Length: 623
Image (cartoon, rainbow, N blue to C red; front, top):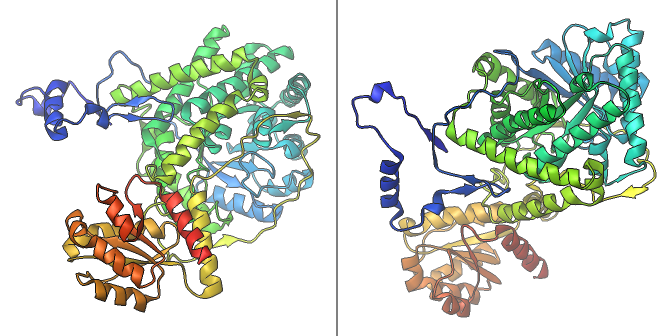
């Protein structure tokens, strides 16, 4: 996605380029194919054109103060309080400017988290100077909601000035209910509890913010950008109403709510999403009769994009996500360590997560320019589209009775499920690429080190009085990782992985491209590819696969060679005992003849790779 500019002084001597000129060149390359082939679509159906003119008459979207860096947040989630404290001190000594205290059972805990007791909180915060400008964010769940009170009590017992402590308390019962799928209380019962906690914390002198509107819930569950924004708006407005209903003026309530968003590796969509949230919240403030103030937005790099396989690629994903969130004005960013999907990150993974932000801030100077996307045609258009679509969905939730009622009616869950279904289909077909998992797998990667720790045991989350469909967090790579787990289990039990024999036909020029594709295809599911030389003689091919002892085979070559030799090769493989024979390429008008010769499946770009690989395992298990 690029932008056409109008002012190029270095090119002044050349004829001015126009979109019409560009279209003529593109039409020549397309050779009659429709231009729509170049137009992408988001999961919300928003169009992404290949070229945009400069957006005129736009202003930068106000976010952080001019040239101010975002807070470099570091997750503190070790179940052992003393170990967590040591991690926190190391992080602060080495560049972190904030700590995200992730308590067990919280929406972003992902299996671990701090013990939510007063004693544990005191141990975790020992020797940390909370009144020295350190940002502190609490990520709490229903069983750890008292952690906010324990933190406040610790500040008081330590003799610190609450007004000098930069603490975001993270109260968010709506996110908890959405993730867990039930609530022991009605919204009418929740409101006074939340409002009372806010009033109590404010009375102690804390400046807040106190409640978070958390869009990560939708993102983690596989939802879209529009759904994430609309859910966040619905929650934010619900909290504003609750605070105002407790007798707190809206002007004061305005600073008591902050937002959380996920940042993922789709750079332009992430930037547009963060910018759109600021514009949408400004619209809400205006509708409330308030003078708009920049909303505090905390960003987490996305949980759902993490992979267990080839986890070092997660570093690249997190870098792009941090880059996008930082340029789009996030006030605080937490980078999920690259090994988090495997377990509790070790010091190296934590250092990489921290340094990802330090490098972007100190060496790339990303914070020096405010909203560099302002005026960029593509991002401005995406921002406006997200605003319109998210506002419409937010209004839909308001008509349903607000965020809690919308969850009870399944409004958000139904839309997330539809998006998740479409997303799963694209992942299965490898249209959405997960490098290291669904594409470019490495069956020989070394084991990744994570810390050994026992998660905190928490009591059940109250009586399930008010049930609705849950929105649990997922990772997109899980289906492919399940196949890799099967492969690892076979290696451990039998000393060898499942294998597929690449039956290459002709010369390397004929088969290399498709053999390379087939290798990546099968190894994405943990089925190791056994390469071979090119064959022209069916008898030699049959002898080679017999010698290999491999039951699955995949013919690899060019369409021209297939036309001449594929049928004979398939018959030779079948006679040699191959129980299942694939052909690397799309089915053509020769499909019937090939199947009659023994070919039982085709592997090609755009096909359902996941279903094919799952079927291959079933066939191997039946043998």
